[in-house]
Amino acid sequence: MYRKSHRLRATGGIRSAHQTLGDGDFRYHLLSLTPVWKEGAIGRWVCIFTDIHEQKMINQLLENRVDERTRELQQANHDLEYSNHELQQFAYVASHDLKEPLRKIQVFSNLISSKFGTELPEAEHYLNKIVSSAARMNSLITDVLEYSKISIGGQFRPTDVNAILREILDDMELLVREKGAIVKMEDVPLLHAIPSQIRQVFQNILSNALKFSRKGISPKSM
Image 1 (cartoon, rainbow, N blue to C red):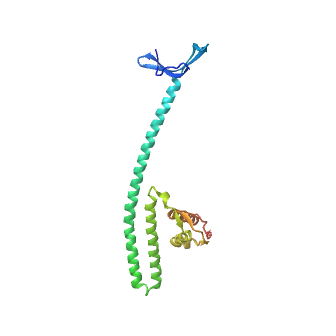
Image 2 (cartoon, helix red, strand yellow):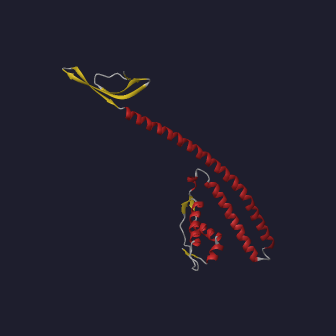
Image 3 (cartoon, rainbow, N blue to C red):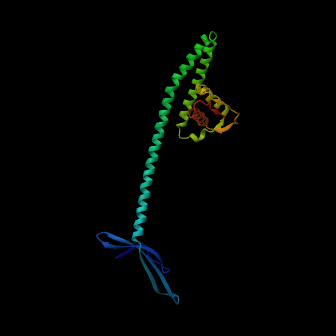
């Protein structure tokens, strides 16, 4: 027995149908009917009946696979959003906890400098370095918090790369001195960039140059 869901017009057409085999089993077929006209009337029909069951099953399998993958992707996106939210919360708490001891370092260093700086100029010099390094550390912690946000694309802004390079050299002063490195810096124009990431790029370049330099040879970085 064959079933089809649409009536065929006199102009003919192609319809899908299925054959019931018993016990609920069936096979898909493609039914094509074309009228043969004779003297303004249909004289006969040309019928083509094609078994498309395998093709139909493959299409259905592919559709099921697509639905399955879509559900998996939606679940993965949900898990990623949750993970990003947790990361942002962690970064916020961590940055708050880390900033407090830095603030105390800056406060007490300033107190020591104001009280004993005039008597010990060399100590004041080192205390100023401590305060400056603590301030940059505070800035880095803030950058970590910003980096953890999903909307990182909106953080591009005019960036003074020269100031960033000077801060990096100041932070790595001891390592540069230990390696006997020679670092030459030329003026870099103002860039539209994410400061924390451009800082990371140049810091990695200089750090790797010093780390993998040959022993006994003073590394040079331009």
